[in-house]
Image 1 (cartoon, rainbow, N blue to C red):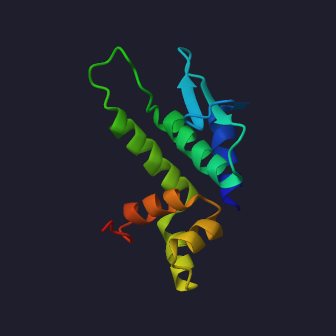
Image 2: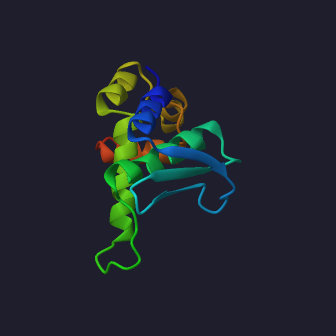
Image 3: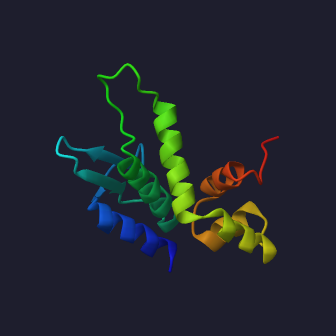
Length: 136
């Protein structure tokens, strides 16, 4: 099963509505309505790798209910973003699949990104998350 299909299954199961939209500053966004419906907008000018990463991140917000609430004094934007990023990492590249890539001698960030169909920046986040990459 491909990564896109896994993501598509979650989108279908959670009934998340996807839209193409012009949002060049952020690349994507997600909202939850008062009735609990989730909508994800993806910028129309993204590469396939960017689109996959952005979609997974926004779906993470929907699945976890990690949305900003401007009326709440307890909102920590970085915490909500981190939770969505971690969900995206686990959804797109489980650690066992990353280890299998290492075993096939795919170890450079650009090679891993190409192998998994994600951006290099996301691949760095993945490797940091699983403890296989340390910033200098």
